[in-house]
Amino acid sequence: QVQLVESGGGLVQAGGSLRLSCTASGSIVSINAIGWYRQAPGKQRELVALVKRGGSTTYADSVEGRFTISRDNAKNTVYLQMNSLKPDDTAIYYCNAFSPIWGQGTQVTVSS
Image (cartoon, rainbow, N blue to C red; front, side, top):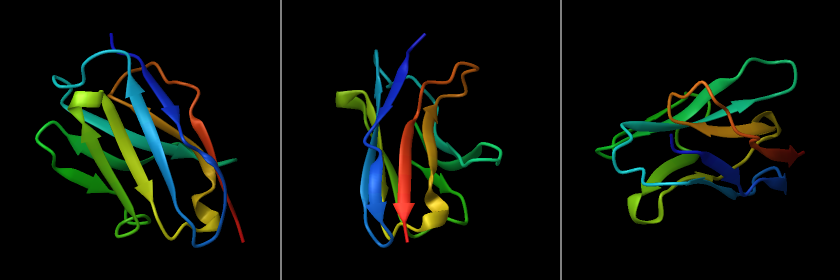
């Protein structure tokens, strides 16, 4: 099974940008869909964005127009470009391909 590792998180001021990377241990070409999720303190994990094998994307209402998910099959990587960040975006961000196994995630902290 392909393992996914998240990176790219950090501390940023409100209004700033970050790009997260989700790098796979093997080819992602055959993976139907890969999603970015987040979990804020005291809250349930939620789906932020999803990209399907054909390139179609889905976004949570809260990030629509600010975040962009993309996949680079040649690099076995899925990206999440996050613009106009808000303090409410503060969370641990995970990527997952409908697996019961979750990685460590990457922390995103947005200061006001």
